[in-house]
Amino acid sequence: MTRRIVEIELRRSAALWIGVLAAAVGWVMTADAERWDGLWMTTVLVHHNIQWAIWPLALAAGAWQGRRDRAAGMTELLTSTPRPGAGRMAPLAVVVAGCLAGGYALSLLDGLARAMLAASYQPPGWYWPILVGALGVTAAAVLGLGLGQLMPSRLTAPLLAVGALVAIAVPQLLWEDTGARALLLIPGYLGPTDDYSAVAWRSVAGQTAWFVALAATGWALLVTGTRRRRLLAVLPAALGLALAVSVLPAVDRAAPRDPLAVELVCADGTPRVCVTRLYEPVLPQLVEPARRALATLGRLPQPPTALVQETGQYGTPVEQRRDTVHLSLTVLGDGTISTGAGSTEEGILDGAGTWKCGAADDDADAWNRIDAARAAAGLWLQGATAAPEVLWTPVRELADQALVTLGTLPVEVQVARVAAMRDAALQCRPDLYDVLTTTT
Image 1 (cartoon, one colour):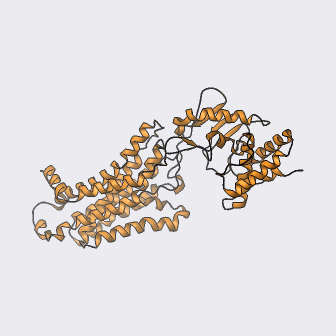
Image 2 (tube, rainbow, N blue to C red):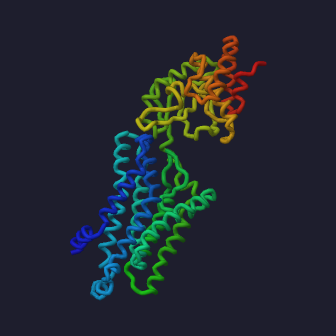
Image 3 (cartoon, rainbow, N blue to C red):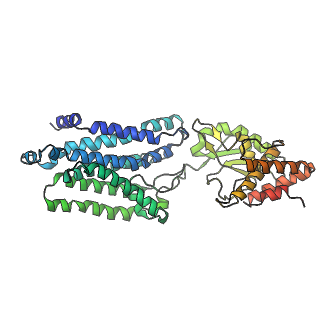
């Protein structure tokens, strides 16, 4: 009997089409041709983040379906039947919430299939953000049903959608810098993440408690008839809020790095070339250009003898080792490596195999001189006499001047200048251009 009622609800309600819409929205918002398919957890977390768009849709869809009985003038007739309210409303709640949560989860299948084919690192617990997100969408649908039953106006659904968007966006705009853990109550929010992030168990537990509480409040609003019981319906949400805030971690620990993902995996043979476990599938295409670049850097005194992928943010200081090239590795959507302008080997030689750092983010003039010195050193190592046209004009002009200056010096002095610039770059100094070009 229950199965037949559910089938009727699927036919007579718009739940199935709303689920299809949720799946389409989710798929469009998570599709990114520039993101490498091998970033398994990144794909999951991007999908988790789209709750900011799916949640208002689910809330509004639930409210629109929740007003159905009153809009049809059937409330008194239905309440006069001996069947309890919970039994009458359960099929509708299951259908609406199930279709929305199913559409949300199905929108990720394409991304997971591509990640599986890329044979990349699959982190443990990757499924938790998906399950929590589906639970969040379910909670929004049930809460919407309850609010639609409580306020059966045509305006309820659109107003709830707008209100949900405001409630999601405004706290992030106003309080994101504070790091308040209450921000993690926002659907889809996990604070700052990167390629190596994984969701902390406290984030999962706290958000689960919050969404279960919202669903319980929505269900109570949906099945209770008296005003007093409806007032008591907010109690689960209040208790869930208190529990969630006590369990949730600080925002900066909501999605910490997975230590397994950042472990190094090295190619056979020498010189040593290593990438993180997350990027292991692209190691074969990195080995040869990396070893050619290390051979070229052998022209300098005390050259590096290994190349290791660095997991720090490009442009920020890292603890560089003289014997190691710390490579910032980016994989494009087609699976090819990008280390900046030009080939992989040229990217490694940029800055004579050093990490880019040394100036404040907003100091454009300092960065122009740093970039010019790094480009000139890499070009000199390759035997070039002029900078390529692809460089930004101020950087290209400075790099050309540096190459001209180097060309006027004896070879042994040129080597000493580039080696001195490399030493300065290893210390993250901002005066690389002066070190490379100033005569003494």
